[in-house]
Length: 181
Image (cartoon, rainbow, N blue to C red):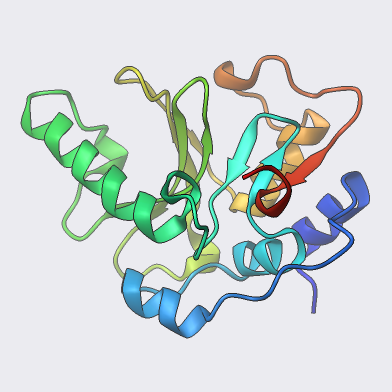
């Protein structure tokens, strides 16, 4: 059954003509140490990795360019954030707590923003919410919804964000990694 947010996205932005090969989700989830949300897996199976509206770049497992690979960016961003917080940058209270972690699922390349899932112990992936870090500073923004719902809401203007003040755009696009990398 198609996730409603993915169905909504496909109505807004046609997916590429040739669907990408589905990742080995078992391998990906084992490497991350956690299952992933169904809406994200469907998003990757329908679109693959790539960029929506020339702005939001969805990370995909197995991307040849590590800058857009889910696993590589999970490792890199984990180290970057650990170093920042160890150097004294304040860690947002909502991200604190034993066992809480962040997994990046998208980036805004030129701005340096990252969109993460906020993963709490005992929480199902379907309950993970989106948090955004401005990338070049200590500001964070929280959106209590799934990645698919966030992305669809961003494209329609239902999600309001200081960091995406140009949205919604009058027309939408998706460029697959396979076409631009």
